Image 1: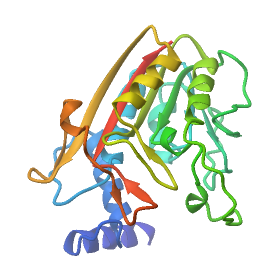
Image 2 (image 1 turned 45 degrees about the horizontal axis):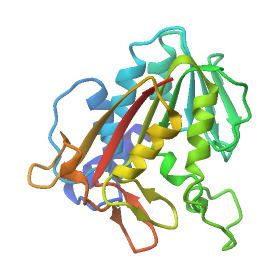
Image 3 (image 1 turned 120 degrees about the vertical axis):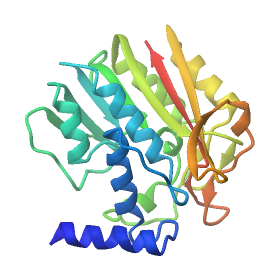
Length: 262
């Protein structure tokens, strides 16, 4: 029954595509799975940056074995992704400020309720830390992402708190460990729920982490081609995110994928 409803939702979105509308998430998940499986497809309209980020990080994690992985922010907390990660006997711990609704009970999967800017875990505990579209939310109002907490207008924005998150990621990584980070990139902008990083923001992240080596890839959605494509940093420096109003950003038109080795 569930599969039938999912197929109907996907078909509805294909016939009546509305950004973040009915069937959007099911259709996006369908395409992400195809991309992970290296299957060819063409986009008919904009799909958010998860279609770049998730296949990128799963490709990285599919080539490692018997390692301890920390997913800061729980972006990878889906059974189909966990299957890929622990299939190589990797152990993964998901950490988030709020308790996850879905919890995988298998032996190689753990959950930790903790603030990423002040992680409740020991130094040099993990071989890999992933932080996928999470860094930009640290220090911002994240109440809209969790229905289980009482909403309040009493919130103090701290746009520099992500620096603590970077230091914590570095602290819990083992020597020679790797951090994989992704975040919206383009014109530097602040919203209630997140910030978009610009060139100086990336430079600050690198300077704070002090990696032995690093690499950055940039992707942007090119409307004329109906596709996300790898581009130069310069070509997306002035891009703004997709947003419903001036206070809330929803997704990016460009994204940076940053690899840092401790």
